[in-house]
Amino acid sequence: MSEPSDDQLTNEGLPPEGAGRILLIACGALAHEIMALKRLNGWDHMDLQCLPAKLHLYPERITGEVEKAVAAHRDRYARIFVVYADCGTGGLLQAKCAELGVEMVAGPHCYAFFEGVDRFAEHDDEITAFYLTDFLVRQFDAFVWRPMGLDRHPELRDMIFGNYTRLVYQAQTDNADLRARAEECARRLGLDYEYRFTGYGDLKTALADQAARV
Image 1 (cartoon, rainbow, N blue to C red):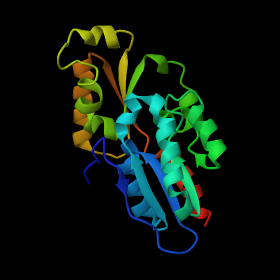
Image 2: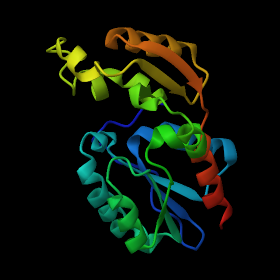
Image 3: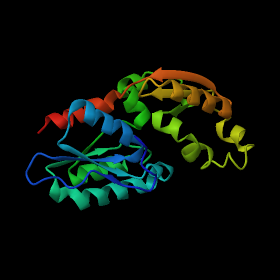
């Protein structure tokens, strides 16, 4: 399944008449994982609306875009669930979701909920780690290399990543090609490489909880 473009909304269509349908308003970087979980678990009463993944480059815009998406769809759904963590909004997204009366995924960012928020919090050396997920390995050039100007100014690498010591690849799937690509990303950034298979972590738990509340 190809990833949605960074400026595209992924919408599975309007729900049929009747109660019980749930809308997931999600970061586009999570589209592949959410669709996989829906298929694996038969969550056919869940629809997915993705906001552009590149909003993560402008976290100050996330709260407003989520608010607009909720307003556009809330009359058609029994419940809306926001599939974002805080994601650099400084608590603004959580406050807005509370104001709108919708729930969201708990945690500071997707790296925490993929590994499990409690388990992630146990690490005491994560400040020097740079994280990639399956999505970011696939989209490394589009979301890391080019936006940071490293394609044009490779000398910026030491300035941007000089305080990092390792790249941690949090793998949602066991994919040899992605593992090789993640190792190459670490080499390009001049960082040590660490592989962690996380699966879907707290994302699966959160969606399962929503799906069960029909």
